[in-house]
Image 1: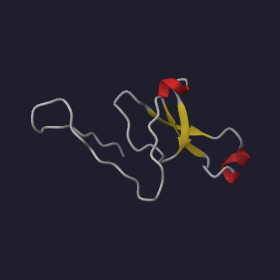
Image 2: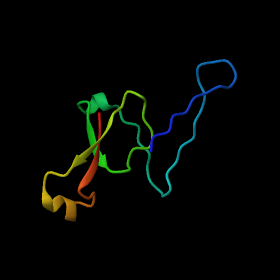
Image 3: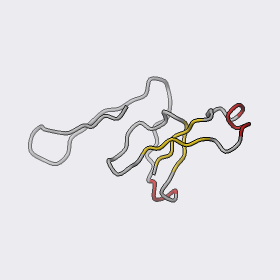
Image 4: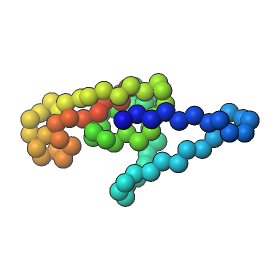
Length: 79
């Protein structure tokens, strides 16, 4: 699902939203332009993005990667 957060507090353009995962992990900030404008990642890996990021379904190219790669057959494409 996709959630949209807005700030209606005191005057000023900035507010804070705290996000976290349901298991121990590392949260990494990525600039898509530094990776050619597109990143393919494990399904469910996206935690937060701006409105300019499109989330698409991607599939593995090799049959063996779905079984032995650990990610499965269905991936997320972020562009």
